[in-house]
Image 1 (spheres, rainbow, N blue to C red):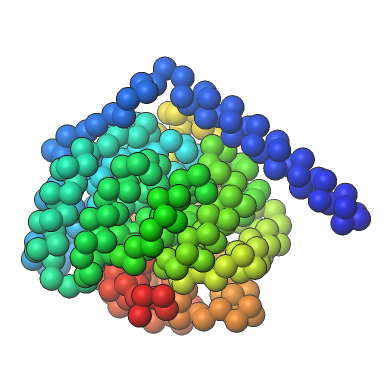
Image 2: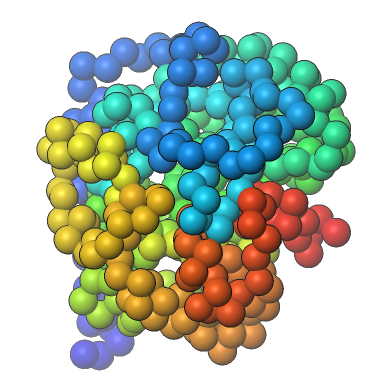
Length: 360
């Protein structure tokens, strides 16, 4: 097909994507209040991750304060560890079919927010009681940029000190990053969850397109932010190698991520239960072949093939493999890939991930 025709087809596909996305957002907005819903801190404390089953030995010195909470109950077979959540909100308007928040919120995906004054007070206490430089993940129970107005105030708090950082994990596009572009804040780590175009079209229908996410990430990276990419969950759809190779090439041609996180689908039983109840497309569950401490997974060898393929692609593009990690994977997988890991240490939001080339 001539280049000009391919360009026209792509433009038509993007236009169709925008139409579908707008219709989904209009549908989601019906019967919702215009005023922001607020949730009391004691209620957000009760939100439990569906995968919280087994506690590792040893409790953190400080147990948190309902809003700043340690996640330290990773199953022992998973090579991940403790990290700190910033529970400024929960829920997400993007409504991705596979989203594990469906289990954490028992299907209540409509965003709810903690009053910002309470969040700032909780951070004051956390800054005093957590001695080591720490990443606070604001995108664990919500999309970190789903309400830029509220997040701007929280980000300012981090800019007033030089020890801790906030981690903004998102699927939103350029419309939600202006407050970051207005003033560079070195205590902010920006991270985008970006999937291959066909996967996003199937199961991320209300989210900005991968192109929009890449553009937003590129803009904040050029501004000087530590900017990371999460390619997760990687689905082995037909032609997956081509699709994910194209995605990686597009990212690398737009900007160079400071770190990259890879992951494959996880099917926690609560996620599947509430996804079915919500009536979303459940075809994303067709790939599961085995159980793990983190729910259902693809077959071991298939996951290994996916990771090896993407590590090889990144290596061929000159990307440092020391800046790549895999998330919520078994210790056996890390060993099979020959990757070094420290049991009980979070590879994505822990001390290993604190610094990047921009922050050193």
